[in-house]
Amino acid sequence: MNTQQTRSFSAHDLLLMFIAFFGIFVYGLLAALPGSVLPTLERNQYLPNDSAVATFLLINAIGAVLAYLVSGPIIDRLGKKFALLVGAAVVIASMGGFALTVTRVQAAAALPLIFACSLALGMGANAIVASGHALVVDIAPAWRNSALNLLDICFGLGLAALPLVVQSLQQRGGLGLIFSALAGMTVVLFVLVLAPRFPVPMHSGSAAIGEAAGLFRNPSFLLLALGLFMYVGAEVSVGKWVVTFMQRDERILASQGLDTTRLQELAHFSPESLSRFFETDPLGVAVAGYALGTLTFFAIALLLGRLVSSFVLAILRVNSFLLITAGSVITTVSLIIALTASTAETVRLGLIVAGFGMGPIFPTSVGLASVMMPKIAGTAMSLVMGIGFAGLLVIPPAVGYVSSAVGGDTGNLRAGLVAIMAACVLMLAFHILLTLRESRRSFLPEDALERDAIVQAE
Image (tube, rainbow, N blue to C red; front, top):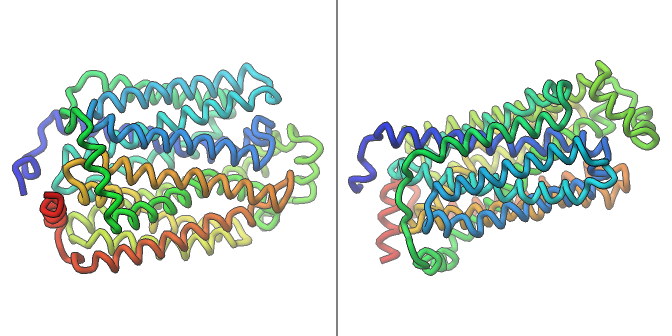
């Protein structure tokens, strides 16, 4: 193990680590935003149906994939500081655009502006993610997977925090206040990034791109990336659709004592009255609050899964490939139970267990990608995240498009949610194949895996 890997953290390192952690916390808030506000945007006709919601998510995913395609080379050439600053600035512009649109523009004319802001949100938020992960690996290379699991605990905190406060913010200042508050949080991140000195970029030329071609000749990297493609699509789909599912599904609403026939009539003849029901009527507020609370519990379980994973990776030295496969098993079984349930309580319980299983999958996969090509860790991580986040182009929009195709204007989310379950089954298959392929190294510690990768590269 080299000197860089064993050196102690300085105060400056801790400051950079804090910035990375805060950046991922902000990303968690941004990731929770669509799932928290999409039902309101849909009821208020800013997004008139499930097909429009699916397009919103597709455009957001395009922005995310674009961010990952360019952020890796930018990180390795121009540095993490530049990428973080640009990402934060784009998010601030996006939040400002959302706030102005919902407060100054009529719903009938707002759709193109909503879509444009969604694109900017995807680009900016995911530039923050790529930079934050690369920064942590640069600071703590000797325990990257454990550090990345700790980092993504901050994502869980952000994902849990917004649903807790979104109803209160909306009652005080409407959707505009929610977007303005998130813009303010991102301004804080931008200011924090300005002053400190960041690590020097690893590549000043095109070497990183040339070396990255070797990743695509590695079957293990491809299996890892495909598994992450399915995982990201499934996790984000849960975050984006579960609140809508719990507020609209007839069986779930009936289990909570609501008159579903009356709600269907309100949705068809008076969307404004339906929106007021969920925002002012005590029963409607309780149902909406339970759905948002379920998203919070899912996020907390995700956080706990990453905390436990950080412990088992750093202290117990559990093999990373086995860990993500175990997480896939738990996730797949639990999500199938949750998304086919008939009661709100079962949905919540299934999502809590699924969130715990999901915990280690993303950060551990990103860490393994950096081990497979340690000389260009930033590019390797951004590539695997880029392929992973390409799952957003397929799975979350598929939920909405299938829902609209089966259920028409009212939608049939139960049919659409099959896309999430199918993605989980495929994810599990890819992770099993990856673990079997890597079984010869099942008991090697992480630094040995990295040395092996360096030897193979040379």
